[in-house]
Length: 436
Image (cartoon, one colour):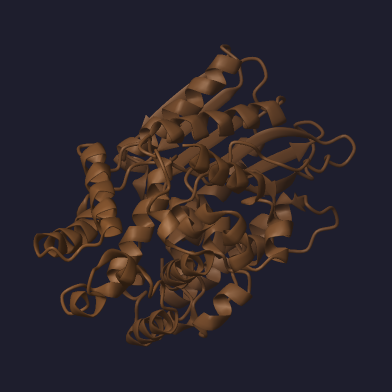
């Protein structure tokens, strides 16, 4: 337990400090923070470091728009756990496991038993993450949540997202019982809250992309030592064991368990060196880039899966800006929405495009920076009073000030008029070329 806390503590100190992380290599980051290799399974930090830049004189926060991922959860289904369990159980029945192999099998069996009938559920870590994020939001922008301000919260219809929304709203009301909170989880909102464009999604893994990905994986072997650790006769075991996927799933189980209450030790992770965790992260990182980033192997259009969400964010903001006290609009969903939204907007350079998968990491496209459990994008709006036509705003990615690919004279703040024009034009160009 102490070792888990040490690893988690290191992660919390450094995971989201963009400048310091980008100054390191991904391997350096994983060496210091092993859970960084978890990508979309990484923990959200309990503490956010760094001060926010004060707004220009006279401006104050008056409205917040947000899209956030649910908090830490259990694995969606047991199939990923059954794969390594079946491999090791078969080897065990033949008397082929070493003592370490037996320990790994027992650990996997314990994880499966603990997770049973909780597949996909929000964990206690997830509830805490959402309470903490909500707490900091109210604490950082008290003007938005003062007195009887209105908070409109919406969730996808998935249970863990609904409970994440509830956890956040519970904390906000605890801090200010006068808030007027409305919550909704309805199919009516799914066209923008969790839209997965069937045409774009089907076209993500083109034959060129699949070949490039398979070649990339072959060049980045994970842990050739694992077979020697687990099997008495590794060469014989290779005839019936898929070495690549055994490596993959054992690492993923070790990383994933830190999101749950069943994290008594880091035994599975202790089988791997930092460079081996890094190689698995590389597999995952380029896979997510192909699926949701600007990968030119599939024409770089995947971020446009979230064009409806971006339009909705702009339309909602235009409407709320007209109000004297708009409060906050909070949306709770999934990483498969948040990541392409960040790429579509080009937040912190995540709109980078390349056809060379070896360049993805070098260009700073690191998935863990965007979508750990509880990840969020916040748009904080500023003005002097309701008659102020020069509305400013800034973007926070995981509660850290972020940059956009548009010109500004007051960074990290941007003029709302410039933002809406830039992105509406971008969406219109896509519409004219590919349709709605």
